[in-house]
Image (cartoon, rainbow, N blue to C red; front, top):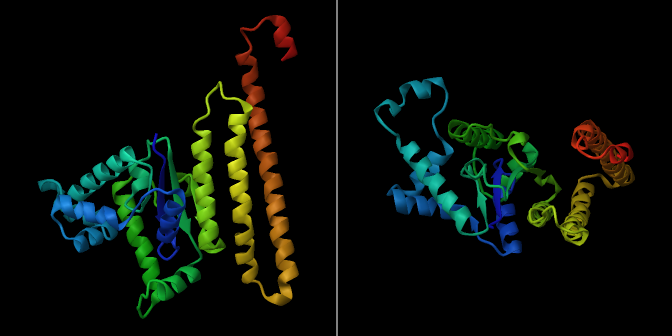
Length: 288
């Protein structure tokens, strides 16, 4: 069975870089601009047109009212159908990372797909657009927000979910922790999910231990660079305060997470226990 990782991202968050680095570390291909090339080959449209159509798809009431869909599929519809088929074929062919192009929605029924969304603070995304992407715009912040709006419009036009809604993804990660730390988080989540997905009712404890150990090891590797990145943004005079706040936040969050999950799972277990043991002998029911 193939393991797929989809990367959706805010503009300037570094999601494309994260996807490529995750693919390199896992030894699997990453499809990004390659998808545009495949679409260009099969559709006959130019790469620039395909890229533009994928960024600025019409949406809203007026656009729908004046579209020519009443006379048949539009160019965008044709490209969408081809895109769905190509992405589905890639997922069936091999394990891979797919960046953008609504891959998370297209592969929504794929059980071994880790759907990831990468975001970051606006000021960091503006800085990346200027320094890494060499974008020259009079109002760079407005430009970054327009790119996000265009991606959301494209996604919401064809998909039934909402772009950027955490409920649509398995993993949402803030690249503020650093690109390398984000790569480790995604890689760890993917490897852990791959290991856990092989469990069966007959699996032993050792089989369960391996993916759990892998997940915890990856978390420890990601924690150090994320903490370094956080502390790098704290003034030296307040380093002690920043470190303490980081530790308290992490420990309180972990404690509350365990308490809440324990309560929810315990309550659900107790509520369903009576019906589950109804067919057992009375002596066994009393013990349960």
